[in-house]
Structure formats: structure tokens, C-alpha cells
Image 1 (cartoon, rainbow, N blue to C red):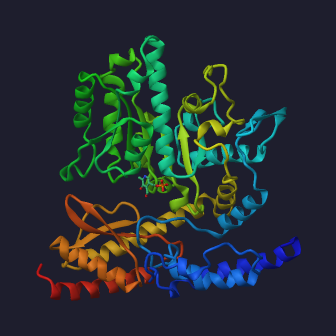
Image 2 (image 1 turned 180 degrees about the horizontal axis):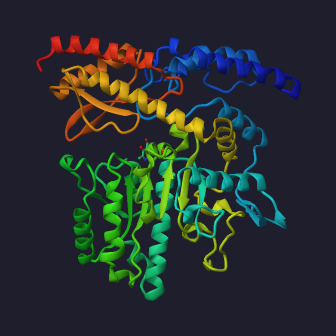
Length: 508
Ligand code: PLP
């Protein structure tokens, strides 16, 4: 394909995308295929001779679309939203075209394995300055929209800054590895003879028993113990400071080294405020030689986008005690996947963990806020020009447009909540704070399971469940950019009608 054909095909593809999104609600939101459906639809080998572009495009409807769950359908209410906007899609095209691997601003040497060629590059050889610098500035823009404490903003006198990771799971892992490395460093500084393996074998990290499973995986990958802090329904699933403190004390008495806690936004972010001052001020553990720092990572994967609205910003109170904070603009801020934004209070903690330089010295290597070697802030070396999507979206929506978008989704969730509350057969299972409604039929788990199955088998709307205190609960998340009141009302009509059937068939 040459540039002339690319122009033509590109325009056709934009039409295809616009048609798909404009007409998406006519499609069943959930696919009707069996596992392995696709293999029989395409050849077992890649073609020897090239196929034509027309052949490929024809196969989109035949091969791909039957197996697509349409996350951008206004009838998709499952999981959490994944962002989609036209400005972000256009920026993604440009990012693909520039196609840089923006791992650093400057490069002196590069080593290419496996042939081990060492390329001496000129000082200031640029992997892609725009890719790095736009990211730093976009992270500051977004940090300011969220009213993060100044220490997290790179373009200030603070030591922090922001980086785009691929996912919240990566951010949790990166924070855990940075915390691990910081703790080891602090202990070794005071006890240089202590074997590093002895320290790492005693590290213990914590997360609420309600936490997303990504934190358990981070513990597995990071090779550390991960303990769950028990929560109670009566405390609205918040981590209670005293419970957490008791665990820390018991673990320390057993010779363990508490070093990391991940907290999530829940409806009770208050816990951040309550727990961390205890860690920082009242009970400084001597094991870290009076420098105990349990790294607190806040994962607000979904909720974080709402913090750009002043009325939701209090949910982030307590950020002043955090070492790192992350959320996914690719969930709810109109920046298409992937774009998971992470800020750290002290960038040298990250660089200290990931820089491939055993002689790393914190003060000698501190980077300026505007020239960042992002390869030291993440696990992979290569990185896409993801900040272009933020730049396009932030400029074309403006803060006001983004706030309106969040508020509209919250209003739609409230509308659904009102419908549920008005029906005595149903109950709301958790406070509705943002654009997620957890609800169920009053009655057995079995009845609710059957109801959900019927809903999803109908394929008109799609929901997923969760467990809350042993109860099977249906989740209704406002997800698509194009969801309107009429879609929510139609969804409720379907749920309500199916509930009638289920209640007639099953004892409750
Ligand atoms: N953390 C929390 C709190 C989440 O809600 C989710 C997903 O919904 C994740 C992490 C995983 O997100 P990602 O796919 O970005 O790793």
C-alpha cells in the first residue's frame, strides 16, 4: 500500500469506524459465539501471496464482528467504562504514524542484545523529545485538574511527577517494586551487613480484602507477602485504622517488615485519612531506623476521572499521605485505551528501583522536572506516544466538557437508582456515589443469578455481577459515551420484565 492508496483507504476506514459507532446500538451487545468460533473461519496458515485490502475489510463483518462484545454500545453496562472519543482516536492515528519508541529524552549508549552491539550515540541524541516532554506536561495538566498536591507535579519545585503506564495493574506493581527497593535501601543504609535476601523475605504488603485482584498479582510478581486487611459491611467496607494498626504491630512483633499498602477509591475513601497518619506519626517502627515509611499507593482506576469535578474531589482527600497515585483516563476520561496515569511524590524512588545502574546515587541523578528518562519509570523500555491522546482530548473538550461528561454519567446512574428504589421487589446494595449502581432482587442469590443469566442471554443489554458480603449482586455501570436516559429506561424495562418472569418461576 503506497501513500496514495493509504489516503483512500484511510478515509474509507474512518467512514467504517464512524458507521460502526453511529449504528452500534443496533447490534446485539454481547456476542453469540462459542469458544473457538474464529479458528474455523480463517485459514490455518498466513497467506503465501498477499490478500487484497478488500478481502481483509470484507472479513471484518464475517470473522471479527460476530465475536465482538460492543463495549461502546449504550446498552453495555458491564465492568467499568473503557473510554472512547473521536479526538483520542485521531491522536492515536498520529501516534501510530510517528511510531516512535520514546523511552528517553537523551541517550548516550544503547546496547542491543543478543548481538551485543554497543552503539555510541551522540550526546543529546533524542529518542523522541516531544514524546517525553508532552507526557510530562500533560501529566502536570491532569494533575492540576485533579488538584493534586504540588509535590506530585513535575513542573514545580517538588521532587515528584507523572508518567503514563499501560494499566492500573502495572502502576500497582511499579509502586510495589519501588517501595520494596526503597525499604531495602533504607535498611541497608543502617545495617549494611544484613543480607538483602533476609530483608526481602520479611517484607509484607497490605491491601483491603475488598481490593481489586491486581494487588495480589503485584505481590506474587514482586515476590512479597500480601496480607488482606479485613473489612466489614457495617463499616461500609472501609479499612478501619485500628484493625490495620493491629496487623502491623503483630507482623512487626513476628519479625516482618511492613512496607507497602494499596488502597483504592471506594465509597469510603475516608479510610485513607484515618489510617495513614497512624502509620506516619504515632507508630514509627524502629526496624526502619526511625525512617519507617510504609509506601501508600492509591489506585483509583475508575473513580479517579471524577476527581476533576470539585464535588467529587473530596473522595481523594488523604492524597497528601500517599507516595503514589494512579487512575485510568482510559476508563472514564475519554482517552482511549491505553492510558493509565501515575504520579509519585518522589521520582527518585521510582528511578532508584528501575534504573539499570547499580551505582545509582540519588542526588547525583535527580532529573529535572522537564527532562525525564521515562524508561526508568516503568517496566518496559519502549513506550508509545500516548500523551498525544491526552493532548487532543483535553484541548478539544476542555476541563468543562470533561466535567460535564462525568456529571452526565453520574446523573444517568442516579436515574437508574431511582427506578430501582421505586420498585419494592429490588434493593440497592451499596451507596451510589458515581456512575455505578449495585442492586439485586430481594431474595435468594439463586434468583439473582437466574435474573442475570436471562438478562445476558437476551443480548440486548449486558451486565456483570459482584459479591457483597456473600450476596450475589448485579452491577449497572454507565459505560458508553453515547448512553442517554432512553437507553437507561429501556435497560430497566428489560430487567424489570425479566424479574417478573424469574419471580414467578422461582421461590423467593
Ligand atoms: N484497580 C482497580 C481498582 C480496578 O477497578 C481495576 C479494573 O477495573 C484495575 C485495577 C485493573 O485495571 P487495569 O486493566 O488498568 O490493570
